[in-house]
Image (tube, rainbow, N blue to C red; front, side, top):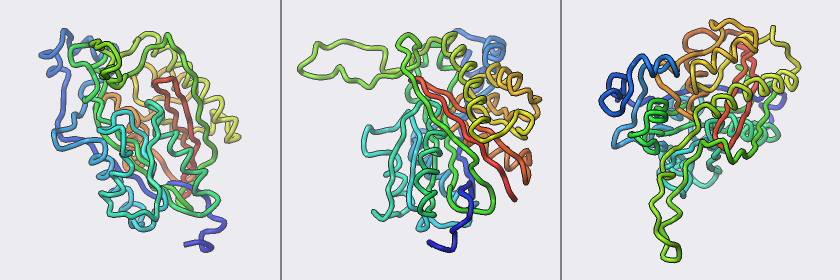
Length: 332
């Protein structure tokens, strides 16, 4: 495809999402754990979330979202050079979920497919890496966020099981006249006392004492994670505006990882933008982890919130901890 794309900006050509059919409402959760609709809504803003069925996983959801993104972009799977998947809940440690999606799309070894594990920042991390890979070669990358959190939460723990849902979002990134990446960054730091983590079952070994561990499920310190998330949004916003040479007044639309309604509202206040310019779907899907930002971006485009000329900021934060942001501008 080479020289015909020289001079074009690197941006998003198409988007797609996949959401499982099964809906888990707050009323359903009242039958599982000691909670109420009012308690969940007050603390999170979530009314319902989607749950992957027996025949759905991060690869199948990611592949479905990918097909729609490719269709939207006008490209075929054979045009791709990379598949990069952000996920925290793969069915397998290896092979990578991206390789399973590569196979589902019928692609051979002429492309490279790999996963990125960065908590709920996984999609923004993957987008940052993809932009660096394709920029110098005028290539195309499929960037996916896909998570099935229902497989790793403890359904007896009301502090965590109420928060998470399943789903996938995808974008095609490459040379285009549709949009452009203005700037991006990724960051991480380890906070051992900020609990938001999941262990693999590493204790099963004939050379270790056998110990039952609850840490194979997602565990978190809700209040500390909330404080981290609010601060991460502030830090990310300052950093990405500086990198993109933008002011707060130039933000046309803001997409923040859908972790909690109160975090979205705090982000809007700090950015000094009305909530009408902040995408909200946490009430319908809950926290879909790495899928959160691409799902919101797809919806914002389909619902007409993002128009030609608009500058869009995406911000995410996640376990580990990680935080990341991207500034994009839509051209057509």
